[in-house]
Image (tube, rainbow over all chains, first blue to last red):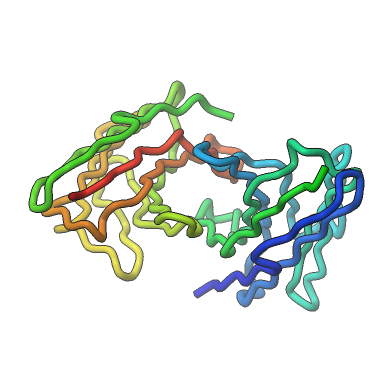
Length: 113
Length: 113
């Protein structure tokens, strides 16, 4: 089955700097890659996703890139702000079958003022 | 997206007892899922709740321990049976409203003494 690895487990960046979180997946059939943000005590919230027919997607300060050949994808947050502090989870799925999503282990992002 | 609610939001239970968690969605959805998130950990899929048929369980999870009901397209329950302290966790339902992605409920925080 699918296995998703995520790095780093913790990340601390200065406010205003960029943050990058990287994930790899094992199943070449996976074609849907969502990212979730989970604030302390809250539910995971979908922040951006990418499907395998696209190499990059951007939404304001957040961007995701996908390299299907290497089976890795990354989340980029630019101009970080205190409210970006949270745990971020990458995930992979075969969305065409509406099947299960497999999550990475999570990255705890802290923004230093 | 969909509006998802869960009951109870939290509970403290004695070992050996059972707790049923409810998940309600504001619209009909084909796919509903149940996840477990242990403290400081990622999300692990327990099962897919299928309307009109038995749930599909992931490796390591069995129906006797986590019976699931899905009586219609807006509602599902997860029961945690014969609880032990190791079952202390956050239990989340999620739904796919037909967009081939998943949105999460607020979670149920369970503590077993």
